[in-house]
Length: 609
Image (cartoon, rainbow, N blue to C red; front, side):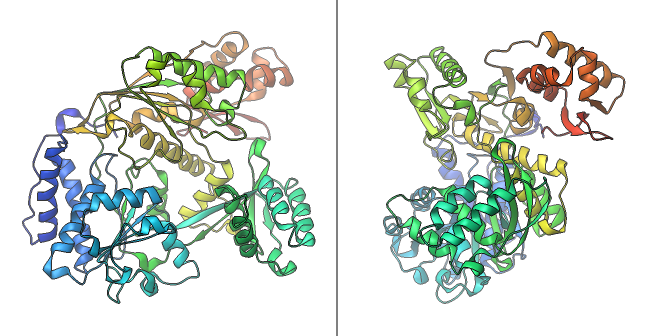
């Protein structure tokens, strides 16, 4: 995935030799726009942007294949601007006055930002979301607006009952389906659903006011879930049918109460409704207990042709698995920046929400070192991406600010995970810190892998290797998007602009080892306290290196413990559970796995678990 800096050259967009009036107009207006923004794409970059414009033109002319067209241009590369300039060209084209366009975004804030970027006449634009103030940004009724901005969730809900997209009148333009269809950011053909024991307990409290019998049934089912083996097939009772209570009504009542539900709580009710009366799989989520998992295909096939703009398309493994198992996906020319002007400092330690738990020594160690790093460059601006404050996570922003002088804090900007995408507000910031990263429960990655491979959970299991690849791809997406909020968004030919990033991520997440692939050409250096292994951990790592050097593919834990003279109990407590052991084995490219017998050990792998 590395890019040779010498192979790319600056160039102006070339016009197509064929009749491409819309695409030619888009490229000409883009060139003028980029010149005002000091953005100088390479020849290959222009080629990728032109592919986006030509795909939309094919849709407008009714000649595009019924497929998903994936454009993977790194963040800041101009994908959204290409769509905006195409919308203007479409509206201005006399030959396309009856051709409608719909752009589906993931968040309300993105819909509002897109209105400004499009800059089309208000009487040709409509916005259709759940928020009236956002909808008011459009100036035409949906059916009479040539360009429609809506949310992905709106499309999913409108077609949830199996309705075809081409039959969904609420999205029509002048009585017909819109021909140009754009999906901004990540696309999946379905929804991965998981339901943990804690989720079930929350639902018990939610349901009891409506049906004590339903609540008691759910409580006993939650208790039985903890006894299921990992990977077991579980028959979920038809709770709604047995108790005559619709989960949709329960959910509506709770949302309408004074204490609005969090997203995860709403998702739990939706997941239970989806799983009721179905056979689903059980997964063990470690400290999180057991969880149920399944998936559903929730987007209609006739939404295609569809243009998907996902900057993380090159690092997400879900697209590879969709290509391999489902088909129907076409990759447009991708652009990977040369990140050689980027320096990344990697601190190989836990950065999950648990690591930032309120009022713990571990959290203080993290925030104190972050503050010390910021203090080392007091005259520069900083963006820090942090976990939201919650019952588990402390006030990370406050802890960092309180450790710094007031003049320095004035140069700090904070962005919570979940808002780390689709914003250009920090594109001139030269220093970005990822104070940990987001991780989903293991059951989610398993359900997601089932879904992208179209393997019903009742039919069997997907491979552990594929699940790990799915997780690594999702981790890479988070890191790429968050780091690219800063100055590396901008380009000087094939290269990003100079920037420094600091990333907290445990070795076992795979993120530290994947940084060179996520940011080709970047310099990756250690950050944070880098304590060398010593004592029993060092002895154990030395033993494993020797065994692997002899060609061993698997080294049992029992042999490791014996080699360093510890019984299994002490070995597990002092070595196998230590952070240095997990970091050291991950650096060796090893993961924990079951061996030929019933015991566990370390095996070679191309993935990191």
